[in-house]
Image 1 (cartoon, rainbow over the protein chains, first blue to last red):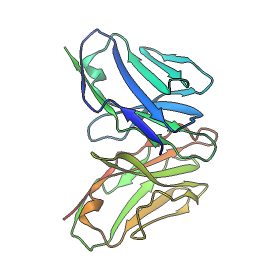
Image 2 (image 1 turned 135 degrees about the horizontal axis):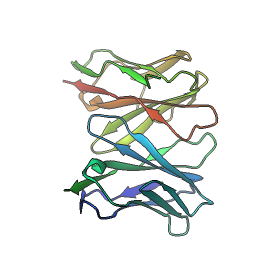
Image 3 (image 1 turned 180 degrees about the vertical axis):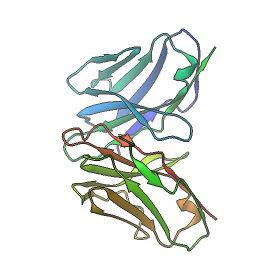
Image 4 (image 1 turned 45 degrees about the vertical axis):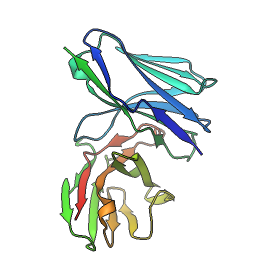
Length: 112
Length: 114
């Protein structure tokens, strides 16, 4: 069955360092992959989308890579700040009318 | 724009009661999604609509759940009768024409069934 795996344990990182979050998937051929941020008590907020034919995408301090051979996406936050502390969700879809499936998320804590 | 609006924000009810959750999508968006989020299972898609028509309801747990979208600016998710295992946060999200991938989420309704 289709499966999306994100680090279930929280990731603690020192302010100023680069945070790297992982999203692995199995039994899936996604047309695109997305990363969302979720703060406690709020709905997820879209951050970045990367398509199957793209290797890397950047937005300000954020960078996403997508390796369809390894079936993995890496999400990087450079020069991390305490305000980056949140849960980050990856989401995949096969495109068309296929639904978007979310991973369970990784909680990031940036320590001042 | 005010974003996706959901009501109520919190709902506490007793087992067996009917629960109705409401959603107003962002104006101009033609896709509407209902999700349920729990610690154990994460964010699960229940149903989604395109132009008020249900496209995929395969995530609706059972017949106790129903969803409607009578017009482009309003949708409801109903649980009847409610059970304690329905306790979760329910999110509504919408997306714009041609941009189905990017979803804009509401603040959620936290439901507790006693």
